[in-house]
Image (cartoon, helix red, strand yellow):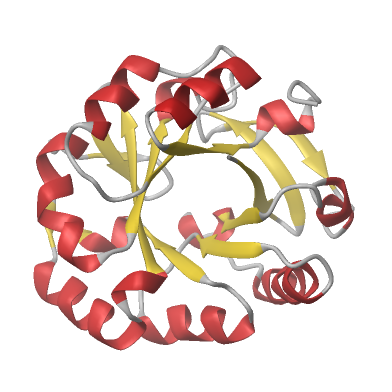
Amino acid sequence: MIIPCIDLQNGKAVQLVQGRRRALAVEDVLGLLERFQKYSQLHIIDLDAALHTGRNNHLVRKLCREAKHRFGFRIRVGGGIRTTSRALNLLRTGADQVILGSAIFKNGKIRKQFLTNFARKVGRQRIVIALDTKKGRIVISGWRQKLQARPEEVIPQLEPYCAGFLCTYVDNEGTLRGTNLKWFRKLRHITRKPIIAAGGIRSQKEVRALERIRMDAAVGMALYRNRLG
């Protein structure tokens, strides 16, 4: 399954190359919902919140309402979610699940007590944990900070706190070079929980390959560039 991604920065939907260079920006953000309406799920990511440079709260709320009530999307929202209150607000707005990333680590270690409280208050089935990886290591804080940990090392420890994982191969994110199917096959052997793959996915062939290992594909650049139809 293909899941379109709407990444928000300064009130626009953007696509970044490896989280840094902006490759495109769409001002008519709400118009993307109609463009993506043939898909059943949607990711909305507030990049400004993730990078501590601001928030797109009003736009996120508007997107959630429109996506849910007009088009019936199943919605996941991420980017800068660090508290249960923010997560619960997003769920009340219309998100079906929240994506939790950088907040699960402190000084390179998993914050198990934080995750225990977060899962208890928000609900484990409403949490997807994002593990973004560059050169084999987990990266956080908008992919600016690299940890020593690798996703295959922490996934078993994180399983009790979430419904599934969003794993991004940052090395190819936004490049349209294709993704690393070998890496995703390796992750598939580590957990039975759902994994959503992201990072450089550029073709229906890759989407089908991911489907064969029971993974959905979160896609940005290839959809914006009309590579997937």
